[in-house]
Length: 169
Image (tube, rainbow, N blue to C red; front, side, top):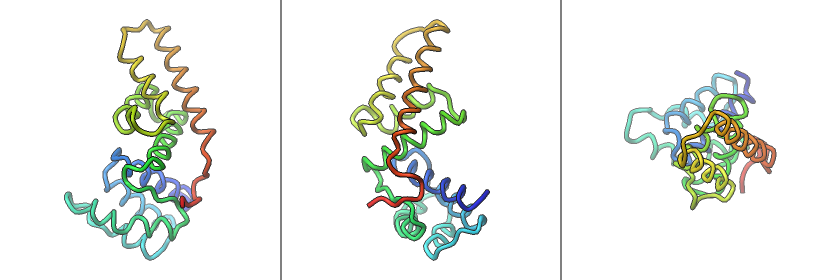
């Protein structure tokens, strides 16, 4: 893994953690991967050294994550923030486009972690999740619905206003 790939993975893990989609250990692991890839900063070392023992890692992560991301010129998203929700939705949309998740995976994730009351950019995905749930589909109907989800994922990925590595204010 290159340093740039490791930084992108850390940014993604931090965004997903901010909405409760991944555990603190995923962010800690991504911090370790950065160090292995040659990326370094004082707070990153501390972040990577957080004990993954269940219970206190989230508190330690809250204490050091912001500093580590700022030192690396990455965006920090407060837990439950709208900016974090938008970033996480875009991460998941890119995963769909990369083929690592399916369209129903994306819509059910949006329904679970962002909800209809969350970031407006997820509203269409949440609505489409309801479409999967409402009826028994023929293969043709599922194919059409999948295509709608993929189109929405493309729109979200292409409309990302901030490239990876640009810090949030």
